[in-house]
Image (tube, rainbow, N blue to C red):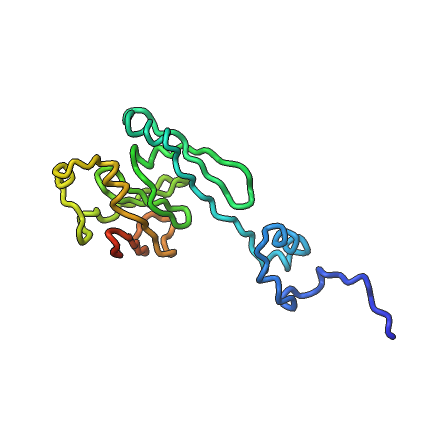
Length: 190
């Protein structure tokens, strides 16, 4: 039986010989893999888990609706794998705007006038999207007054979800983006 070298220098091995490195989905395993050598680190870029924006509490929601002149309270964000809630003020989100989706660093907001816009809370860049009045079955200006539905209730029921194509860049021009909205059991694309 031939003697084997028990002291293998893993940093000298080519990571491409190791097929399993692409399947590392646990953050701790990815960190350990990257710690072996520069060559290994270059094959597995740092992965930043997404941040999730928490819904506002019912009491926060009522406070915002009854006091439109006070600034909105901070919003909570959490990242996968951490047990900490980060609090951020998003003054540029507008008062009484509701987040109906997100992609990358972009939030998709709808306000009480039922206008949609994209907001990058880190850069402050905002991009206006077409109004809901362009949807099939969208309400025209002033129609909301007839049915006595409070504007915040109508806003909250209008759109179920909005998603963006992943090609939206950080430059803020929005020309390379497709937005899709689910409303009235229909899909609208702009």
